[in-house]
Image (tube, rainbow, N blue to C red; front, side):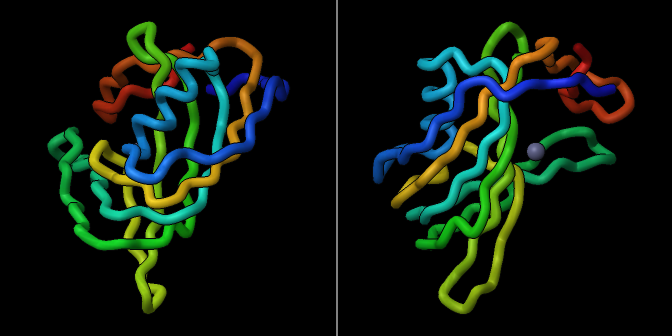
Length: 142
Ligand code: ZN
């Protein structure tokens, strides 16, 4: 499935040092009533938590817990609705002193050192996440 979108408002800014990255993104979208969109973000974290979706068990496992100061080489994702709430789906790639990277599904517990974002609100038929039987994931099912 797919929908046609148009660019609506866009936002450029930064989040505060010490804040939880996923919460900061979600709170910003809720405060600004961004119900659909895409974003990208760069910066650095003090520590990170990422998940991995186990396709056989059909569940997320919190497998990556890094007590390390790392660069946010890339963080991107999208915004839509799930259970009538604004939901941010974000993936992140982090790099260390040697350029070695870690990546995964962004989870709560990733703490910002610095985070510069660009958020593009989109308009069009509202995408809503609903449980998909085949994958077990809450996928778009407008
Ligand atoms: Zn994901």
